[in-house]
Length: 296
Image 1 (tube, rainbow, N blue to C red):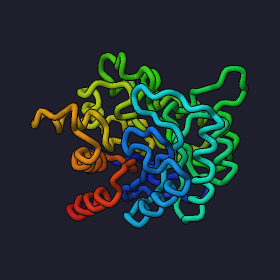
Image 2: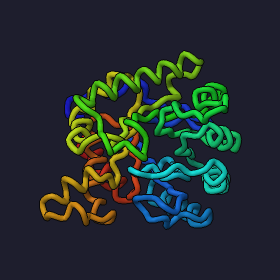
Image 3: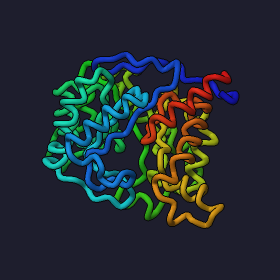
Image 4: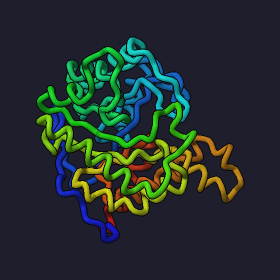
């Protein structure tokens, strides 16, 4: 792993599964949204989203990550009722597929609803900080009241609507590390076991291109928090900014053209200690990680 040490905790406790992280796991993205930046709403219907779940599993996904709200830069929030309509039918059926099911949401009510169905993991871009006005329920409470679910805490600067308007300033690595460590400790103080928690540096969520790549090149520093690391480079604009620069096509580098840079970033992230990579192109990422494993 290029001299980087692996996280101490190499198992992720979730509602139904104890996930072995001694080998990297691939989390396949299922966007049950009409406005996803990456797939243009191809899986917006419940039936289409479920077919995509099955396809990703055939391609080698270890975990499914289902989301009902786009978090692309500039995205507007989705009303609670609409997110529930998008997500619940897909989660209900995906739970029958025999793999860990993660739900990408920051709304406590959605967290509670999917956990009541039996979902394994909550993947929260807000790291459980979001709270609706005049509602006593928050994400910290939902997770701490559940006896076993896994949780991924992500760093995000500002919010999706404004995060790229004024990106982070200064050296992002210690800032991200400090934030994630602090939130994880707060969650443990509420009784959540450490091996239920993984952390995500939030690539593309409020950093400049250079800052994103600093998080990759110095990713080993994030392992100092002593939690497994989940990383999501797939199809991010920072990849387009770098990979498209050679041909002068940064503005027009479409999602299909971002596949190769995404796979390269995923391999580099695993090489530097990431335990889970969140990707759209599952088959190709799985193949690339087999090559990495063959040389270890």
